[in-house]
Length: 502
Ligand code: SF4
Image 1 (tube, rainbow, N blue to C red):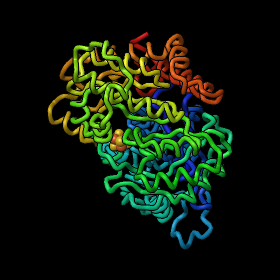
Image 2: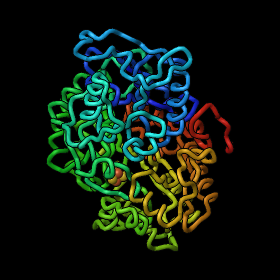
Image 3: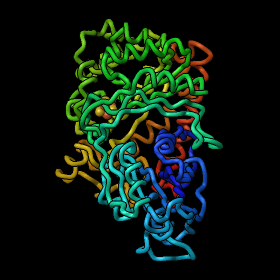
């Protein structure tokens, strides 16, 4: 029997920033050898009109959900040809594989494939998924996928499979056959853990993995890195800083491998000089940190405790290196910025570049906050910065609160034909939707202008301290700039590429 596994693109145009999806090698390793499996990544390749398969499996993220549903409906309507193969022991199976789903109608000259969906959006919105799929896999694939395939073989698959999300995080082969012939960014993808010890209200990680963090054996992480052909790696962990002991062991194990890498990490590492040194010595050149907001009141609303910890750290203006003459009216803002600046300077001191993520639109943000955040990012020569209008992801505490308080602009923005990438998804309390959308767009475009890219490259020693850093800085910025212009104002899903903003 044959499976087609599809990673769905969120819009029609292909991107320049596609990273290897680790779900491919995970699913490939979990699929028994007597199944034939083919992988399509729509972010980098065009899907065939017909797919010859018994099962079409979709990995669905919220931004790609609308398009995933369109594809599922289209393939089902086409009734694509089925790959029928006599089972080795048809007596034992009781029926020939090609007849297991006698209830499906034939159309377009062939039997319909079973549609199965998994991924983040499937876990957050399983009922919605079942309007377009025969089966939904909720949570990790490690325990649900083999069970589903076994039931398909036995002709008794269910509508829904729930993972207990407790299976060990296992070795993943970065050079698996599923990646053959596919052009991704030349970046080895490594995962050392799943889950996060924090619980930010806008983040879907805690709702997906409520029971905490699972750590991969460090020997397996080292083996993955050793097996990876890439010189530059990215740890896709939501927060690599699981705890001090574990992360120290990880850095020490990674150091002899002499790779360069980037990772996502919480801000509470910012003043831990010992760990930062170890991290740099282990090959870290860039950290992605959720700065989120310059306003501590917003950080409190979102439960961003790692950042609040930094805001309350013992640093003062002198440490932060900002002159008194700034004379900023808003004392509260100034103090918050100084704490963040001290954290940034300390990370720079260890030779590590910063990719900062900001969310804008929380209750205390005004149109002026966006401008101020942009100026902060420029002044501190952040290698990259995302200025995102607050995203309301289904399954999160934030979604529930916004929904209860009737603050949502669209009931389900991911399905709404009126929503465009970069739009405000809700009614902010202290500015208009237009101000939020346009303010973030302006910050994104200005920050990524060629002039400002060069200004930031030369503005902080860390961004050009070696040829390697300079090349990585320029590459990441050029990709980021291209992607911002490609995505901003574009409708999600389908073939439509009309843009409202230019
Ligand atoms: S620290 Fe990051 S990964 Fe962890 S809950 Fe907050 S936003 Fe999510």
